[in-house]
Length: 364
Image 1 (cartoon, one colour):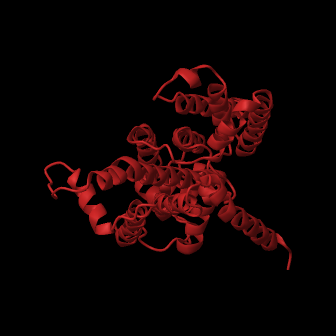
Image 2: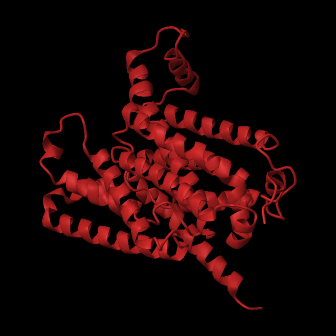
Image 3: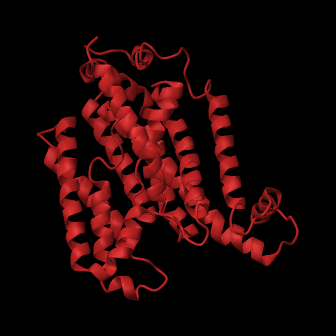
């Protein structure tokens, strides 16, 4: 039985969603969240061992825009803001937004708030690719160009492709099989990295530094590498928010409404995995962002993915910018890997979430 497109669109929101939840009606909330993220970014760019007032920071940033002149600034302050801090803060925000947005998409497709962007082996595959490059002669002779990000990106894509291939059953990819395949691929990748670290122990510290993630070497080029993949995922997944809402109720119900569930799942997971692979390639493995940010947004503003997806991206950016600020400020002279900071925040949150879910299943 075919359902008219207009009726299908009306049915594409869950029954408990607030009325008229659209991009237009939620614009004030999105603008407020975006403003908050920009203020966090401005604070992060201004803060450091050399303290530069926010007003001066804004003037320097504006001076680098075309057709705008804000007068002369000290060369040192200009270099610190534009060449060091701005690329770092921008990349941290982009990676945070990408991981949180991808995490929300994963949770929607798998209908599980514990799903996260590394579920299909992205992290393990990226680790294998990066480790192989770090121990190779190319890592030494590469000069200013680092071959590690493309190697990590390739490894992540291979891992995701393996997970899809192992889970595919005929024309469908069952969610349970996909998760199990991702676990298997991740285990293999972790074993390979462990073996390589033990074999090439003189490179262990470099490998660990990459695995724990960080933005201390961030450049404008890194941000340019990530941008097209993040934009593609956002542009491809955001219009599917209504369909993801329907899939939260029941996949069979979604099929009855005319939704090609398998095609939507493959499209969302492919785009989210591609963006995650790009993020990991330029930042290393930064855990928990894609898990705790979407869940926190869901607890505060509800499960409607028309609101959850953009807010996850905005708050993910703010969260990782703050985490990076803490990582470079907590101990002057020594930078704590950002993965340590996110783990210290995310692990207790994850345990509380598990406990909450367990309590919810407990019979009265």
